[in-house]
Each structure stands twice: as C-alpha cells, then as structure tokens.
Image 1 (cartoon, one colour):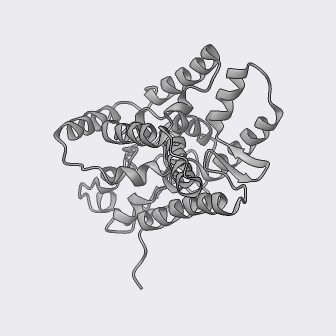
Image 2: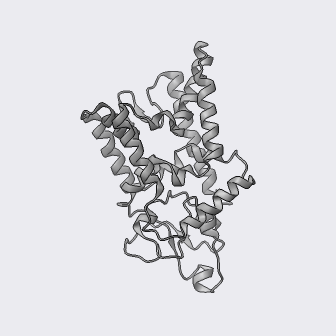
Length: 281
C-alpha cells in the first residue's frame, strides 16, 4: 500500500478545519474559526490576538489568560504544529507560481540569510514586538486587520452571509484583495514576518516532543559521504538537520514532515521524545 504523503494529510486537516467552520455557520454550532476555535462560549482565542486585545484595552482579562494557558500547553506538547497542519496560508500559497524571477531572487536571499549563525534574532520577533506595541499605542489589535488567517475566515463568513442573507459588503472585495497581495508579494511572510509564528516559536523552545532526527546509519551524507541537502531544500524554515541544530532553530520546525517524505533513505524520523542536548536532532 502506497504511503500517503504528509502534504496530502496536511491539506485534508486544513480542509477539515474549514469544513467545521462552515458547519458552524450553517447549523449555528458555535465552533467559531481558527482565530477563536471552540464550542459556543468556550473558545481558544488566537494567542497573538488575545495579547493584542489586553494591551489595546489596557486591562487584565482573566478568560483570555485561560486561552493563553491552553495555547502554551498545546505548543509545549506539539510545537509549532499549527503553522503546517491548521493554518490555511501555506495551502493557498501553492496557488501562486514559483517561477517568478522576483520571487526566486527573494528566495535565494532568504536562504542565504538562513546560513548565518542561528544566534541571529529572527526578524519575526521584531514584527511581533511591533504588533504588540502598536496595539498598546493605538488601542486596537492592529495586526488583526491584516492577519491572513483572520482574513481567510472573514472572506468565508462574508461569502456565507451573502449566500444565506443576501448581504453584500465591501469587505468581500477588500479582504480578498489584501489576502492576494499578501500571498503574492510576501511569499515568505510565514518564515520572516509572521508575528503569530514568532510567538509560537518562542513558546516552542520548550517543546521536546516529535523533533526531527536523522538516523546517522541510514543518511547518505553521514554514512556514505554523499552530499545531500534534500531535507533542507523542502523545509519551509530552511532548517539543515546535518548541522548543529540549536533549540532556537528547531523551535521553528512546524512538524510538516516534508523532510521525512523527501529523504530517499527514510533516515529522518520524528521520535515521540527527543533529547535536547543532541547535536544532530
């Protein structure tokens, strides 16, 4: 039986979340969206949105603290899994061509920057700081206005209301346009500019479960001396498992499993419990 690729499973998982949102809209189940997923009054609010809301209101909101605690627990257990298995943005980005010369130039620059020491602060952390600071200064969650996850489900809700209640709004033009611009011009926003991804990465440093690890006896590069960079070439975070991998670098791993799928020797595994002090993880 042919093994199902992780990319196919990720697509099905993301579509399942979208389907739950549609079911919630159709039958009023109150399941919400990925920005506030749950059941009726119980929801896990987007961790970044919840922090922005508290800073914007300049008040302490106890129910948001519960959502943050749930987010921290899930991230410690599963790492940055949301970015590959739930967020719809990577799925949509596949619709945009990769042979654009401008995009390819940007890709080369990003990969070149990833070769630098892993001690360098990721630009996403600066964007995260800017998003939180702007919410405090302006009194509303600024990043939520352009968040691709929020925009995706805002469009979905807008289309549903148009069909169900015949309520056309300008948002059905504005939101898709903003989303298309973000996906087309900022193809690598997930890696370098997404404050939500940066926030998850910070907490993911505590994650020691299901980290990718190379079996040195199977890998062509370590066992036969054949240079192979296939795993790095498919990694959206440009993580090179052949190099010394620090906790800060591996915290960006989204558990997409593309590296395991592309390895011709099946040398990459995701063991349940990983050792933090391993040189090659």
